[in-house]
Image (cartoon, rainbow, N blue to C red; front, top):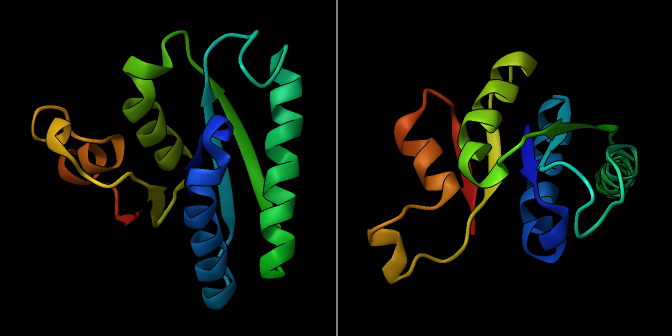
Length: 132
């Protein structure tokens, strides 16, 4: 499973491509998961539009790796506060063996507030592969 934020597609593309490569190499399935707030948002006027964009991105990632990649949209009333728990819940529901997740280069702020990937790696039972 790979969490994605389509608003920052250029920053998370590497983690999606690495996840697809791993899935291809090991014969595993891959699901890209997007957690969004209630529409309208920066990318989509409703949830079905976001679903379509996420599915298109999943198809692009899968085509490049030569595999089928699925997508799943999760709607949250407060994605900033619930992102970690929603990702953990999705991984459990999907029975994900590995979560491949993008993270930014750590800076001063991470001494106070860890990244979502760092927090999940440190405080959940998920197997994590964090990509910078």
